Length: 182
Image (cartoon, rainbow, N blue to C red; front, top):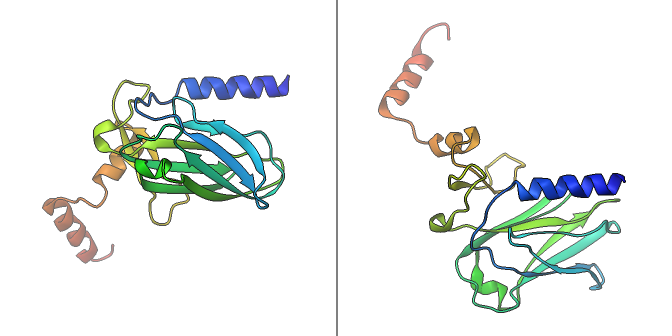
């Protein structure tokens, strides 16, 4: 019953999530340190996949295109609990030429989950609110992996405006730092 509730909640979460249009289905193979396949499957229409619980250890997650013809740039995020590995700017052609592989360490009682998403600005996915999403790259000093966010979210607005101060903002900051007692 506990697994049924968890799987139902996960299904509801994924179905309420992003509407990716052009994410191709990719074959996913998860191999242990000895090269033995621990999982074989494919990404779904949203570019996600998930394994069952795995034995603790190091694993290689490989993504391959079954039909070739994948174009554009992609971001990949693979996680096992709080351990995340990501790759950005992956050319679609690499999925057909040997594939793309990432290594991840899996702790006790954990599974591997991942997502492949288009990175191109012209093909940004649409959020559940019907507005285009914004790609948030990995930020220096942050443990957050690169990801898509709703364009009207506070996070997206903060990233879009960070590092771009107007002349007035710069003058105000300079005046504040020169004021005595501050």
